[in-house]
Amino acid sequence: MPVIVLCSTKGGVGKSTTALILAQVFSAAAKDVTLIDADPNQPLATWAKRFAATVPANLHVIGGVNEETIVDTIDGAAAKHPFVIVDLEGSANVTATYAIGRADLVLIPMRGKQLDADQAGRVVALIERESKAYRRAIDYRVVFSMTSTLLSRESKHIRGTLAEKGIPVLEAGLPERAAYSAMFQLGGTIFDLTDADVSKPAAAVADAKQLAMAVVGVLRDQEEKAA
Ligand SMILES: Nc1ncnc2c1ncn2[C@@H]1O[C@H](COP(=O)(O)OP(=O)(O)OP(=O)(O)O)[C@@H](O)[C@H]1O
Ligand SMILES: [Mg+2]
Image 1 (cartoon, rainbow, N blue to C red):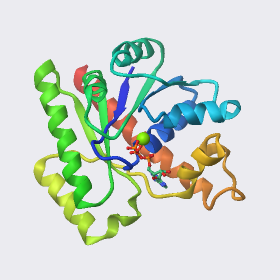
Image 2 (tube, protein in one colour):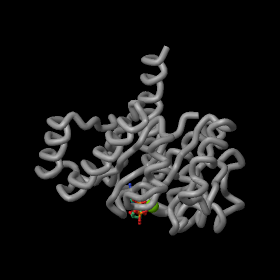
Image 3 (tube, helix red, strand yellow):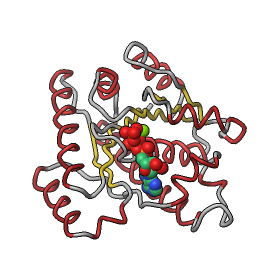
Image 4 (tube, rainbow, N blue to C red):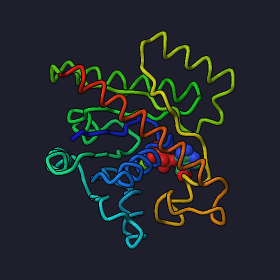
């Protein structure tokens, strides 16, 4: 526990990147993390396999998870480890529906574009339907990803629209940084990257920690409300 699910009906918005960064920050903080790769393309399982020697010992990546196995895989991991993170493919499907049904927090990465905002609305609608179906409030946050574009007028407008609709946005976003794509190419974690590998690796670590802190903040608020 808790179970954090990355979901978007749009592809390429930063789900796998966000999932892997959160997993790396939590594991670097000496927490056991299960990272479940439920995307048939297996980006995270491939990362873990290709760079097996550099994967932290307390970061457990489970690949090959599908609609038949997702619920048992999540429940098994949640009983064992303090953090479970689920990465989904970029479409609404049965696997995503089951994963959301098991989530303590759904994160919806979104770039600052109108099309992404419309797609985020679809995920929110799906989560709200599931909340009703299961009679359980499923908590979610939009996460702004690749945030260098967020200074544009379009992005400001989107933030305003989300606020109007009452769609909550995570306090921290994930800026666009070379370190975050390099980890998939070079292997290892963002903590292993040096100035020789990418520009500003320390800033990438600092931003990743901010994101993780924001997620932990939401989970803490949930605990306090439940207490
Ligand atoms: N914050 C970031 N900084 C730099 N590059 C990023 C960032 N986030 C994502 N990318 C890059 O953008 C591309 C898409 O990101 P990612 O694979 O995480 O998206 P996704 O939502 O998981 O996509 P899919 O729907 O295909 O699973 C990748 O090439 C990734 O390296
Ligand atoms: Mg992905």
